[in-house]
Length: 294
Image 1 (cartoon, rainbow, N blue to C red):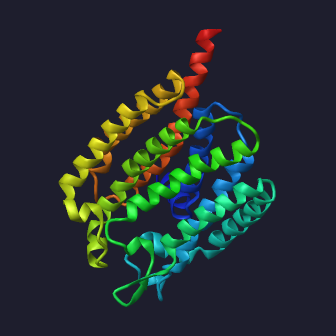
Image 2: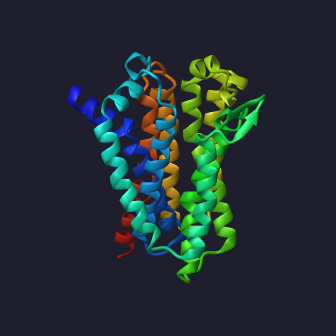
Image 3: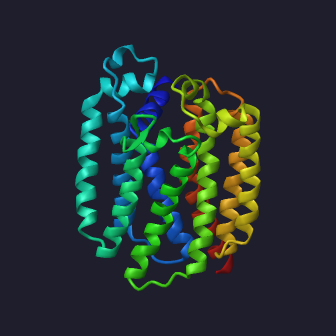
């Protein structure tokens, strides 16, 4: 059991899990749009996500990580050889993939990159102090949802049209909206978990404004709204079934694990795993549908 927890911590603490989740969400977009996979884009999303999330960690490095109250901080800065090895591999992957995409996609990535860096780097002057977008009141979860929607859905669209693969503009907007809502759904619990920490650092977040109970109820409401939106999503019924099953599992996870065992730091990272599971459920649903047709 301890060895399994050790592996889980490594995957979570190094941001490998969230990077894999980003790649899985790109694969899901190809599935929804019913166009061939482009694994260059998948690898690009994986490597860029890993580097951006690790950059955010590096920027927040404490003076003495050994005395940090946070296990993740102590582990990361106590295992820098793993940290830098993964970043080196991700950098090589990113450089390679950037040479394989179209110029317009490259420009689009530049736009997403600026939005992403704004989350980690202090580029805004608030009350005389330079701060990042994370410190802008109540914008954090919406900023994350926007970046993830643009990178996992918009990126697929931009590179696909450059490859002359047709995707309807209306379909793009609808899928973007669904993705934005789903990312809100799985991101909000992180802010609920971090309410005490955010209050200590004077960060104004949605859960702090609503209170814990109302914030949890908002998560349930977002899940139900997402299910209703998916019913009208411009894609095949088998993919809709996969997404809805995942939504139901998320709501069950909220009730039985995430909101029930709030003292567990690692539990909420199951929602990152859900981003991978969502793609796998849709793929499984498509395979079953194809076998039934045959």
